[in-house]
Length: 78
Image (cartoon, rainbow, N blue to C red; front, side, top):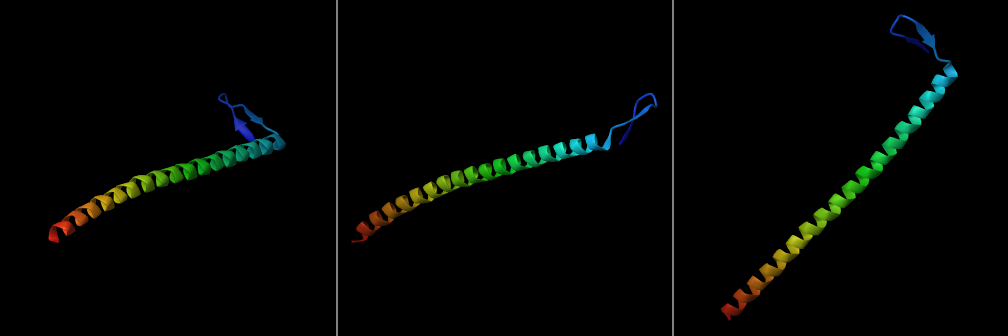
């Protein structure tokens, strides 16, 4: 690979060095992608669990309140 310097000079990096550099860059990119996938998966799982806890807790509370209301109103009818 040839690179241009500021003063017009060029220099060349041996291809085996640039190939090794490319392999290292690819390894780093793969590692970063892998970590990102793990992070996103865990973040999604935590968000889903939090949603389920709050949503179902709220609906269970509503069911209990409604059940109490229904039972109170049914005793008044008797």
